Length: 128
Figure 1: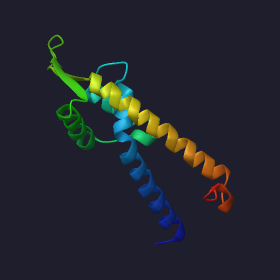
Figure 2 (figure 1 turned 120 degrees about the vertical axis):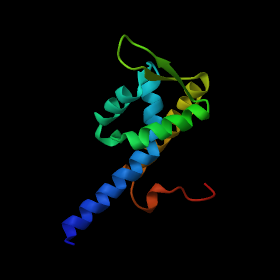
Figure 3 (figure 1 turned 90 degrees about the vertical axis):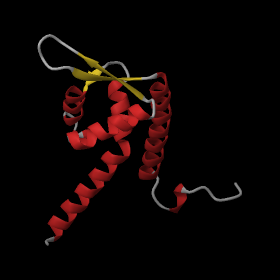
């Protein structure tokens, strides 16, 4: 394996881990002001490189979020097409989203600080 191939593989692994770490936040954010059926939500997420996932990842996660009371799911019959399951946030889901947003924003601030202030001067001296 060439150095370039190793670097590409490392980059892909990093992107996968980042996606896994933010997936719940992304799904809740997508549902915060709208109700979406599963395939609609999947297409929305796939339109963002950092959130592109497969059905095999999305639906089990939605099922878990439903069991935890974070999202609600309702079957809706629309005309002659087969029914679709629409997902929306519950009150608990809105609270969970607010908590995740706070954590996300603090993480971004921390990383931005460290990127702007590398080296030992970035860390406060204990006792000060």
